[in-house]
Length: 126
Image (tube, rainbow, N blue to C red; front, side, top):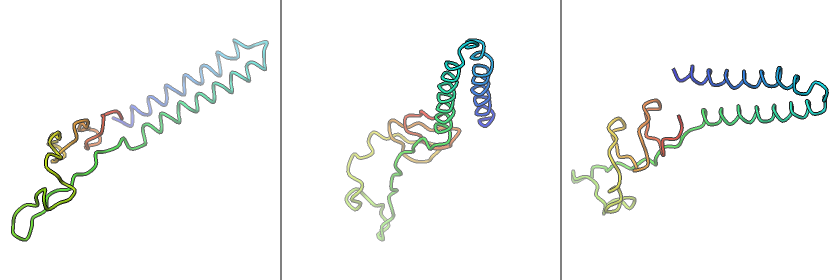
């Protein structure tokens, strides 16, 4: 379903560009060829930027929280505690919540994305 939405948006953007550049601009600038060329160049530049930035937003990674090191079992059978791991200190994960689909802690500003099946920072990518 996501692919169809992306293709629908591309189709809408390209159809708007074609309608504007091919039909509207020639009518507006019938007697002014220099202005028509200038407006066409500006329209093509803005159109390219729109398509490029939309593509970059879709195909780039939204960013994931830093993975949290899981505690290891020590030789004595106990779990590794804050004193034995220099990366973990008391209260380090107090603001974290548990993400059931990821089976791990997630930062306060992250939300689980059902499309990506990962926790995403700020949930700003779809």
